[in-house]
Length: 192
Image 1 (tube, rainbow, N blue to C red):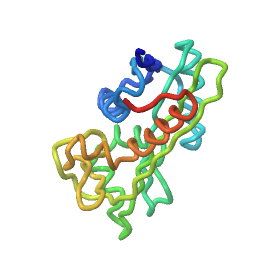
Image 2 (image 1 turned 180 degrees about the vertical axis):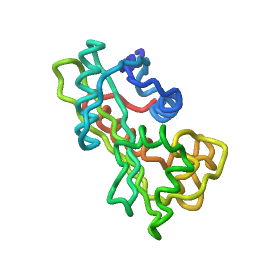
Image 3 (image 1 turned 90 degrees about the vertical axis):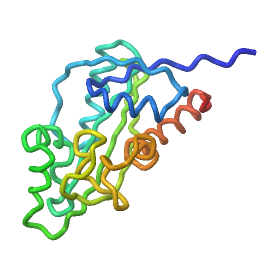
């Protein structure tokens, strides 16, 4: 008896690094196709942004979609920049993000990853979140992308970790583990 064909999900991202990590973490559990869909991003909480983006993407592709949204919350700044990390990173880079905390003794940060899945245009998005508590430090390491060189977890920045190791401790991994569990329960898909 042949094993069932995994479902195909459109992962809506223009970020090749997120695509690579997502494919590595999900493995053969689902088939990931990739599309870029340009939508206007609302302002709001990370959950509101992810839900809205997922609804719009499901309509745009007329099928099942998975979207991802990241946040970086600085405790000293009461969670800011949070879901607005992308424009802050674009404007300031890692050095500038690190300097935002210069006046504060507290360098604690939380990296948050939210995946939203919709089975199609009339299906309400389901959210899966992962969190990693860490510290903001001066840039270190050559790997990773975005804020990886300044986000330290257990003594190493994400940029100092191997690709495989980061994919076992990151907030993206934690969120996708929840998604995988949901797929197993909802669709009977087992990890391959």
